[in-house]
Amino acid sequence: MHIAILTFDGFNELDSLIALGLLHRIKRPGWRVSLCCPTPEVTSMNGVTVRAQSLLEEAGTADAVIVGSGVRTREVVDDAALMARLALDPEHQLIAAQCSGTLVLARMGLLGTVPACTDLTTRPWVQAAGVEVLHQPFHAQGNVATAGGCLASPYLAAWIIARSEGLEAASAALHYVAPVGEKDAYVANALGRIGPYLQA
Image 1 (tube, helix red, strand yellow):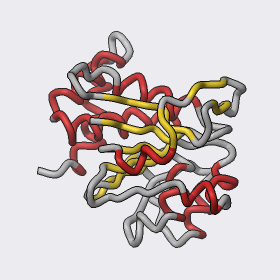
Image 2 (cartoon, rainbow, N blue to C red):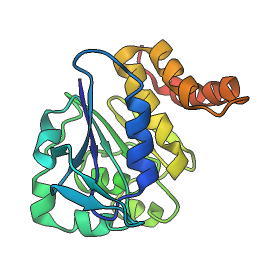
Image 3 (cartoon, rainbow, N blue to C red):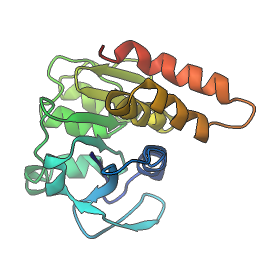
């Protein structure tokens, strides 16, 4: 199981790195989570430089993909050569997007008539791409999920874990990272957000 977290220059650390940390709570052979970047290194919106663990072309063969957000997403979607390197297929992959990452899915035509979640800043751009934006933190339909707000990233990670490893594994991962004294309430809230969208 390879989960690629698409991470571009200007990325939001909360989106890429919280999801990375939570997904790494799953410890089993073959489970791999990577920061998937267009170049060997990318620098965040706050000046943190990270090394790519995989390159964009590998996202096409990943079992699941999270499209992170950042301050340069509009540049990303306007870069035809960069976008041509992305080949995502919701028929064969779990695909999730965080905040402005939803704009990437919209521009790729992966949302169609499905409503989506995004952050308040990105909302008008996603709407301009012809996608209905919901005023909620998480939504999923089939193999595509979107989230709005930096701290909604655990919902995407938990959704991928639940779809891949089951609800118990997602609950355990969330419980581990939840604040002490709030663990049960935190897990219940998160599962309450993603639960209605999990396929039987």
